[in-house]
Amino acid sequence: MNDYQHIGDEDLFAIVQSQSDERAFRALYRRYDKRVYAYCLRVTGCRESAEDLFQTVMMAVVGKKEQFKGGSFAKWLFTITRHSALKYNRKSKQRNAMLSLENYDEIASSENYFYSDREDFLLQKHIHNAMIHLDHSYREAVELRYFQGFSYEEISEIAAISISLAKVRVFRAKQQLQKILSPVLRELFQ
Amino acid sequence: MNNDLSSNFDVLLQKMLDGDISQQELEQLQLLTSDSLQMQEEVFELQKIEEALSSLHNHFPNASTDFLRGVEENLVNSLQAGKSLGIASGFASLASKSYNAIGLIGAVAIGGAIAWSVIVNQQSNQTQNGNSERAKLTETGNSAAIKNYDDHSQITTPANSIDKTVSANIENRDANETLNQHKQEFQKTVQTKQQAEPLKMNENPGEDGYIRLHKQSHNLQQELLLANQELEKRNNYSSIENIDLLIKIGILHHQLSDFDNAEIVWKKAIKITQKYSLTDYEATCTGNLGLLEKSRGNIGNAEELFRSAVLLLQKVGENAKRWEGELQKIKDKN
Image 1 (tube, each protein chain N blue to C red):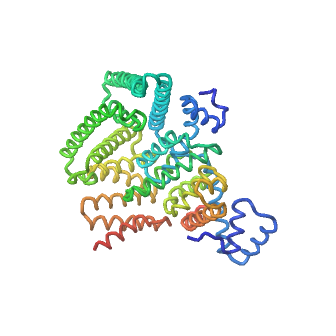
Image 2: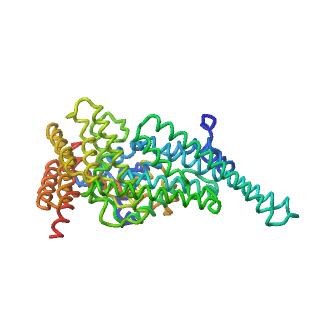
């Protein structure tokens, strides 16, 4: 797989498309598996659903590989992920509300934090827990912007919205987080 | 949902958070907030949130490596199967062109035969590999690993990777066997766990439902086993590090309708939280005990526990919405 280390995503996927090359596929899969799984986990809020959704997304990527006509592979992948997540959430009408918060605690505690500063560490943990209270579109915007590191332009393409709306959603999400976490922030930083 | 930033304050604030603000705009923002302590606090808090969010890039929850690798193998199989079908259909097309004189039926037959051989070979290879892997596990006598393998191998058959017309009979036979197996195991679960309310034992879940419910229960049991093994590995049972694990074990017991053990585990967790003054965790366990009482039908006890959870969270200034919601549900029902 080392031969493929320096090949860009799009070129790797072109090899997968044309030759169904196993090693190219594995290299590309391993670049994105954790990222896509993280997205699935945050939008579903529960591990079992995240695993279901993750498999659906990945099968769709393989099944629809001919539909990729160039551009950014990451953007294409997350467009599929986002659509699958929306469809999945629509289907699972009765979500297990009981475990939602506890699962978010679980997500937060399993993150690899690098902060040595206790306040920042705690704030990150609280942000994870507060994410579930955000409106879906805001949560999605934060996920794409901060956890996945997409630019506003890329978010606008993935979510099929204007760049300015992408900016507004991210900003409103931060405002919602601030409102939810205001007491915590006061305690931590004052 | 407000899709515009109507106030100048919001526009400037957004630009500042994005690091996209000019000196002039920054001065404008400072002027706007200079008279309002509330606005200054909002700016400060948003900056803190921005910093924390910005440092979260590439922090991903730890997915199970076994799961990710399992899916990877699945997809590679699917990819390879697609490739074989591509080759097979190529042969069919070539046969069709080359053997034009023999006629269409003959060409399709030749192409089909090659396609069949590729598919059967592939299936046979997969089955042989699978059988040998399973045989290795059987030798070790590790029943959990065998079950895990069986579970995993059921997922590995990609629905669209095998020529449906050729393999329909094989698939039907296998599907029926698998379904019967699931049904039998599900019935066993029903008999041994009469009180398993979350699995809705009294309802007929349908064929897909049998598979789903059995898998769900099986996965939970596997997870519980692993969690308990992890707990055993740790020396100090009452250590602060074990709280997350104890909460999880309690959740798994609860999901499996083993209410008594869930209660024992959560109560142990509460003792640890009290020892270390971890009030938010104490509230989580207390609220969970409320859910447990609710599952048992003891609504009065549940209400009391939810109320305690709310009070605990309010005491430390945490959001108590979760348990307030549960209290509201009880009120609504009454």
